[in-house]
Length: 281
Image (tube, rainbow, N blue to C red; front, side, top):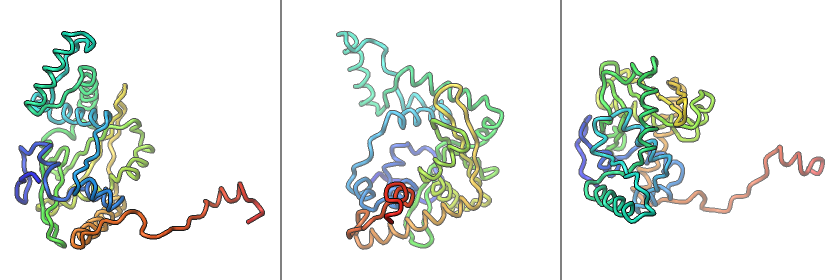
């Protein structure tokens, strides 16, 4: 694992170093809660999930919105030359060689334009823009869990110490609040929010708030600002507590089971039984 700063709140840690470091993250806990065997596959055996084009675009949008001055240290725009031509192949080969040498991510001009358009929409929004002022982006927090003593981490997209505000940016296909609620359930956002709040409180910050900014990746870049209430955060707290306890035990016993360790008999849902079997039940 990559060397990582001690307990505290740190700037200057690259995204790559953060993700490669040993402390436990909310992503790791969500993976373990989904499947201990999947956690072992990804986090112990080293088979990380492949980044999809949607995830790659989301990462680029994060960088443009939150750290535009750092873009040159993270990305390089691919040449527009036709890769079917000799000169085009040569230019692209040179570009990829440069990216490999300097550790840059290759992006297209079209994706960069889209990321800039999303950024302009957010920074021009009277509700969103004030949330992204007066704080710092992409700080890395490390703390020791008081129950198990293990090192834990989180990386707020944007942290404003003056009022204890965490802003988390999410790109999505549908930013309507009804769709967002489904995303909170499907992607474990309550666990992550509660984990981030827990981390900052462990570092001595009180009255921490967590706000999501959801933004669509297509024009007109609809967005919504969502703050989960105390019930959501209590649910998230229970989820990460359960996962952390399970993960601690799994590491102690070196046991990462699959979904089932015995044959499980299942029954069809009631609506299907009624439709297909009717009075035969």
